[in-house]
Every structure is written in C-alpha cells, then in structure tokens.
Length: 160
Image 1 (tube, one colour):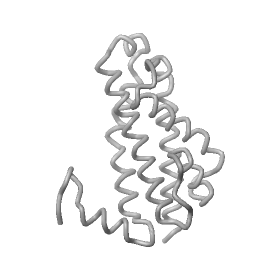
Image 2 (tube, one colour; image 1 turned 180 degrees about the horizontal axis):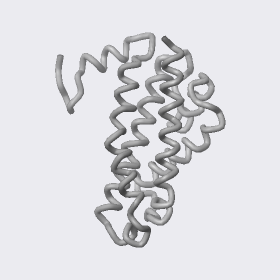
Image 3 (cartoon, helix red, strand yellow; image 1 turned 180 degrees about the vertical axis):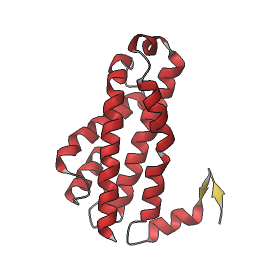
C-alpha cells in the first residue's frame, strides 16, 4: 500500500477494477462534505454587505464551492465509470448520465450543471467573479447539494 498525495494507491486500484460501485467510497465522499456545509451555513449568516467587503471570507466561499462541486463530480464519475454507460464527454454530461441511470432525477440535472458551470468560472477564472451572485447562491448550493446527497444515498440503498 503506497500513500501518494494522501491517497491510498491500493484503494484507487480497487475502485478502478471493481465492476460495481464502491458504496463505502461514495458514502465517505458525501460525509466528507459535512464540515464544508457547516462552514457554508455560517458564511450564509454573514450580511451581504459585510460579505462583499471581506476578501478572506470570499476566498473561503470559493474554496467551499469548489470542494462541494468536486465531491459531486467524484460521486458522479465513480458511478458512471462503473456502469455500462459510455464515458462522459464533460462533467455536465456526467450529470446527464446519472439521470439516464436513474440515480438522480432528470429535473435536477440542469441545476447540477449550473453548479458545475459556476465552479468552472471560479476555478478557471473565466472572468471576475461576481460575489453578489456567489452570496445569493450560497443557500441554493446548500439545498441543491443536500438534494443530490439524498438522491445518491437513496439510490445506494436500493442497490443493496
């Protein structure tokens, strides 16, 4: 067992070669979100004017947005990779494939794609981030992520 970048290489190889999803991995990824969601809730309580003037809080928010989205993408890519679906062409396509597999509802796909696009704007710096939009999106991110998490956990229960 080799540890590199904090990951157990044997665990990664086990996931790559398994023909079924690793429900423990998926549950761990979803559980990992708790501390970030808790911090997100605290940031939500900061008045908008204060938030817009507090650069360190803005940076925290960007990072939390990125991590929550990455958790969603990790879950998505893991499930699709262990299905009979063809590999997704993009992260947005991955969410569509989850809906095609009846893991998430088709009604939520466009919402999750918007989260991915917002993450792309933040991470790849496609332009100046509008923190008024980020601030107004915090509550939605929390709600949408919780919805995603519940759908994944419900789907996992049905797999057993």
